[in-house]
Length: 330
Ligand SMILES: Cc1cc2nc3c(=O)[nH]c(=O)nc-3n(C[C@H](O)[C@H](O)[C@H](O)COP(=O)(O)OP(=O)(O)OC[C@H]3O[C@@H](n4cnc5c(N)ncnc54)[C@H](O)[C@@H]3O)c2cc1C
Image 1 (cartoon, helix red, strand yellow):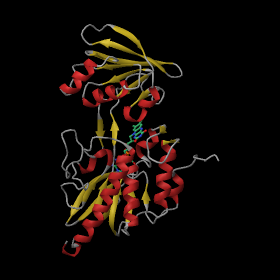
Image 2 (image 1 turned 45 degrees about the horizontal axis):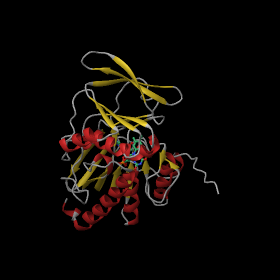
Image 3 (image 1 turned 90 degrees about the vertical axis):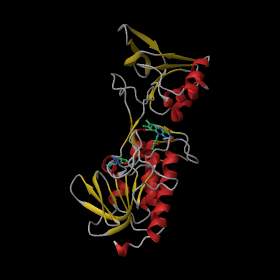
Image 4 (image 1 turned 90 degrees about the horizontal axis):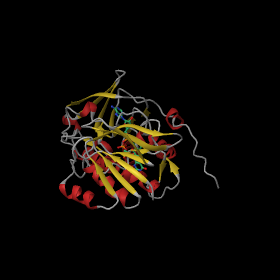
């Protein structure tokens, strides 16, 4: 039986009432990607009054073509999986504000206030920040054109599409080194291209150097991604001499880090050096009642199943926090 995955992400949201600015919600979730959707689902099932404020419903799932590593769900594209997540949330009484960008966050006694770019503000006893991250781009011609047609940002996710092929990894830090080693298990060749020096830990650098199918090009800048229907190679430039040459290959993984969307919470929540929100094992931040989940946190593996799991943890921990806190003594 064919499953129709075509849909409008607006459908589930349109039926929901807007959030009430006069109400104090138990839990407000910021972000409607996998972490935010699962946090809202768990909150609703715990009997909490909850709502979602999200800028772009579905989050990074909308930039993902095939998702082949979400347990129990095979052969679905990112948009199809986002629909399933959000349809599930829509079964509960969870109002969702879409195109709702939170630009300010403040505590008022034990309560939390979230203010949108449009000026409305909402209060809650607890907040889950599930604002995700954005993979850093190289910013070179051809990168956008061949995204999903050779150019990828997640080697764990898309590596299996390049079995027996020649791939490049852009970057020289630990994530680039780890991606190269993972890819080399299945690809014919892996070329790490780094514009300056290798910054990966010594143990990873040694493993790269020792691997028979990995070569490392240092002092080399990618200046263009080349191709026709799909990517066919890259144009690189020697940083010292300026000499340019074309390297043929089937894929390019850009592994130069993520920009966490900590935004409005950056001045209240404790962050890591790279701007990710620090949490404990219950996804609690340093601010009582403020939780974070998914790609915006310092947890190292940026994956849908992990973000969704952390969303559930955050909602359960928030429920426990609300039960134990005396909000009358605000
Ligand atoms: C190209 C690509 C392919 C990928 N493929 C896979 C894959 O195959 N398998 C896999 O497991 N993972 C994959 N990933 C990673 C996966 O998409 C992420 O780990 C996951 O989406 C993180 O979920 P999240 O909810 O934490 O954040 P996101 O999905 O980033 O969602 C964040 C949400 O917060 C909203 N938001 C941000 N700032 C604000 C604000 N100020 N106010 C209100 N809302 C805000 C956003 O609009 C969005 O709704 C891929 C990622 C990319 C980029």
